[in-house]
Image (cartoon, rainbow over all chains, first blue to last red; front, top):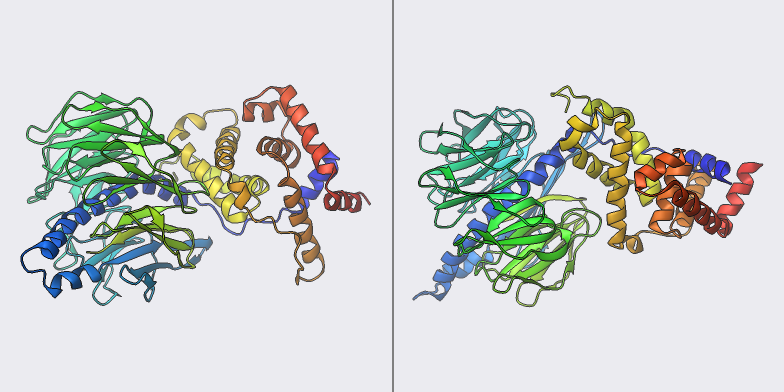
Length: 411
Length: 170
């Protein structure tokens, strides 16, 4: 039976419809590394905007402008272009979803390849389009002229300075290219020593310094006013992700099994914090700056920033890939973005206890609205709005563009 | 990868069809198969310097792939998998028969446990020696033998599959 079955299986299996390319694999490695950088940035932006919006709404004169601002919030879900076979590319899609109505708007078709980020004012989205970055005006939904960057290949990381004036783009080349958001023109590339993977960038809240983690086991501070890199700071092995506390005093870098704090005043590395398990996927800091959460394989480890000690790992059972906080910082949502079942697990930041996992689907990317009321979880062929009040998924928004590569929400 | 000249791109080019086919028999879906191969390669890449120096780098990548698939299965996604019966195919002649056969085998494989399925795919479809399958799954050769015989016994109870094998024999 074995031989007959072998013949049968080998005859009928057929050919794979798509090719797996080395480039695609590299993209994934890099995306895993960079995705959270965009996510954390979005969370910070959302937190800041959330506060502003709250002040507007609950301030002395909650005028119609405040409501209009909230109502205008839009989630953008990005779907990469795909190489069907050598030479044949299906374009990517950026789908706007009005958070007020949960209706998808007119899709923007682009050869999407790379990261997606939104400016703090929500006016422009920057999206990687192969060897270029394309700005999209959110008011009209029209893509502008692609900006040619010298980062080599796809722009894997796009980090926007909190001042909104520059976007730092990282790729595979040994340089970071700034884009001036006022003119959408590239600035002089900043040359730093970058390892095999592109750099991961985090800005201080005042926007004066960018901290760049590279696979050469170092973090390099960059003076954003002059674009000059400072002396590289040695950190734990293989830095994977980086985050800055809201007060701008400390930078946390997660590498394999360790988290290294860096004092921004002196630009020196503190004593490494050893993680009980593997730290692999992200590091993100609560809006109040009290806790840093480190994603690992099936766990999330809280680190108290006051003492720089690791707490008991929170078991979530799935490889943690992404995290988003509600603007009030009370809940952290952790997404699993690998494997056919993607879930979102809410964690109460007060008690560090996980809630019931919410099942979403293949490849989850998450973002929270500025008002903190809704979490959008994008997965294969759908986007699920989840009410943060009761962690219940609402009716999924069906889309037919495949597997999402990212989601951002404008204020 | 390519630029580094470390043979990773060449490895992918040369072996991806074989890897994807194995992944198809494991997952029963081309999209998932592609994801599985890609995920295994993503996991392997950071260690490629070490893997490439092994006698058989593919064995290592396959091990990563099977382990990943096992962890996906543990999350019980198999229940969500399409296990439709053989559909009326409008494809002409041989194509229809091939599609029907493929779906029949896939559906039969769906009745196996994850481990039985992995052993069957590696030992029967990939024709790997028992020792390699054992190494890949991290178990004894005896376990491979017994698991395979359980899997085959289970498949003998599938009438559609039995019929296909009968036809194949003729």
